[in-house]
Length: 427
Image 1 (cartoon, helix red, strand yellow):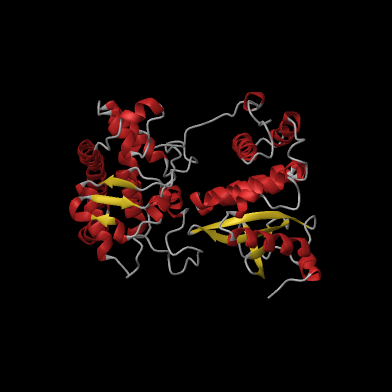
Image 2 (cartoon, rainbow, N blue to C red):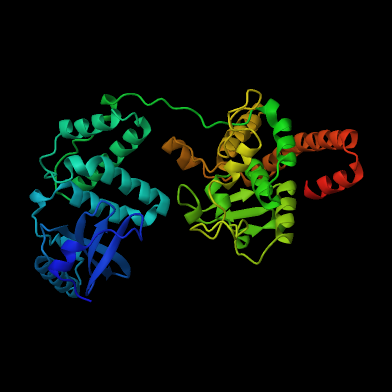
């Protein structure tokens, strides 16, 4: 249904999308509404088989009538076999575009290659910290001082890492504007050195001397077997939590000890293959016996009511906290799921294993571009050996912890045999 000016003025973000909402005016023309109720026009079309968006302008600077006229011009350009985006048929000329309009065009261009979560983070940072200050300024007139003033306001809120990442987004927007010939140079370059250094800290990892107590706590903490197995797989594979949560049975080749993670489930948005140990495969077979016909290895709890069909991102973290490894106890350090990647790296490097194979097992690429051009191996054979050795190393601690619990059961429980039977069944 076609829009009206009165309707557009009253429209607000309805909360149905965490990024922006699209209201159709028909014939490919859409009014977009951000979470801060900023409105702009885009025209969706296909060129050479690819879906594309043409940013027309912001509302009310670009009226409904003007947006329809410009969309019609773009449609005529397309009918001639020319990509309308190259024509830049926008109501403002190239030297009169505000920063927000260019930023939204940059966002729409890059969003398809980002994960939904990352895309939400990017646009939220810009809408919260940048648009209110320089969003309406002509992009050709914005100076390095304007940008630095905006970043300093963020620094005053003590959100250093967010400030650094937001500046990276701003610099990318200006790079995009240079490429699109809206401006000649990027005023955001070299500003990072003018910000306060960000204090970085490694994510809390499990110390090696705490591995056996950690396993003991896991065995004696009340939680579902599925969640406990999720934690064990995180430890054994050193994958990121997001990859584990979204894993599907179709991704696994248990017979050949391979886990093929699709690009959309990886941080770098590229497919990755994990080499699995014998213990990891045994855990997966155990999970298959608990399978409830879900396509996901770790389906969402029926009572959870979450927005995803798979396990919540907080589930394993909550299990670790319930085990006492949340930093509140003097004899137990704080541990988070991502820290098991550090444990894997430290242990394998201490054993003198091939550092290149270790890095590939973590889906880390060589940072030196010249060396990376020659280092094309995935080190699969070495990674299988590493996975098996690391699994056996962890399993020694696991079995020692299990024996410790059994000894305590036999010494203190009147119904020791029954308690022992239940414990062995669950561990």
